[in-house]
Length: 277
Ligand code: SAM
Image 1 (tube, rainbow, N blue to C red):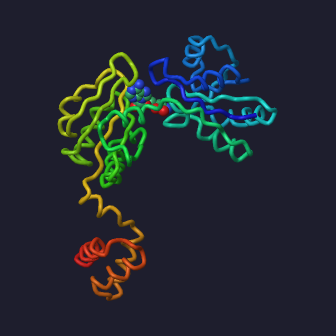
Image 2 (tube, rainbow, N blue to C red):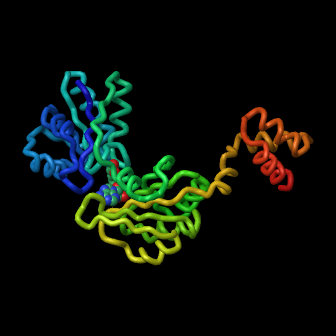
Image 3 (cartoon, rainbow, N blue to C red):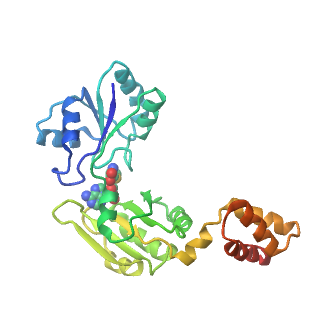
């Protein structure tokens, strides 16, 4: 009856847990992003179980089939090509549908590229924003990066090696050329490497697409920059309304500080800026 979300290796076949192997061995059905790819993993561990494909193009139509089999009491394991299912990979729709149908999915944790990259990056690990793959269109990507520029936590991206030079150029331009960047490449594989430098240096070093898979990590916004970020559009709108109604700058800041608990100094600065604008 359970739906298991089984994490699989991101390069090194040894990175699979004993529990994951047991769950795969005991599954009535394994739903895989690419059955041939998963077939190799299963063959390596001498596991022979029925496989069906579940990828981004057929996920909606597979849902009903898999839910029926869960209702029939079968044990289903969901895997993607690498790492955590549903993380920049198919599976979310199935997880949601299973929950809605009364089946709580069971995670079988293991490797995921962004966590492996973050832990060894040397960047602060207490706060981060996983962003997955950036938009491909240049303008959309620029706007998307501008929206996360003030995030105080580490920014984490997935990207294909071919698009890495373009992403790094946009990070230097829209996030900041002096930000620390780490490019984690070929994690868990023979040519695993971590490159560290500034965004501007990364643009030079990765002017050509590198070989292999990469995770890009970018230092969060410096505290001074990010404190301005803490103001949401709602808070700004509240300040703007008070100012427009004739409330003086310092009084507007005081009122909003009382209402929101945000620092009065920061609100004063914002109110002053809005007043001038
Ligand atoms: N579900 C996977 C996970 O949990 O990490 C991510 C799948 S996503 C389709 C593939 C992307 O993950 C790659 O383009 C790359 O950015 C990153 N990735 C996966 N394996 C990697 C590895 N061994 N080294 C570096 N990056 C990797």
